[in-house]
Image (cartoon, rainbow, N blue to C red; front, side):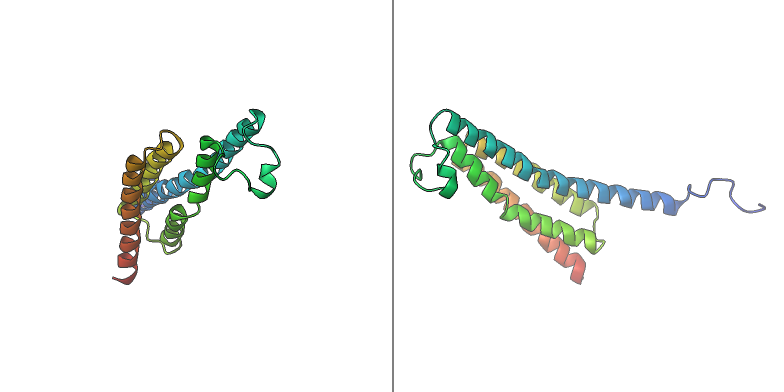
Length: 163
């Protein structure tokens, strides 16, 4: 052994650096996962609200064959859940694409993790407002902030990629 360390092979600076990097990736993937979980939650909520509308007689079950005939008289909660579900396939998809690029190009760092979690938390608040009180100015503010955070996330990625 002579000059060799008596520490186990895994107690090295490289080990800790690698473990720290893996932890960043785990936090980043967790943010993507939480955002992706909004979709099945939204589907479940939409199903519950549609079922309630049919059971209370507000909407005939046949409405769901063509989604026509109730444009002005559909229950507010049901419409909100449907629109919220549709919204999840707009800006949040750009977030998931951006996150996938960060991961596939091995560019996840502390800033990327912070931006990802900031976006997810702001979108969570936006979702709570949209599906709850639906106060438009509050919702708009959180939508605008989430859009700015997403833009910064993309610019940071492009900067890391080309600089």
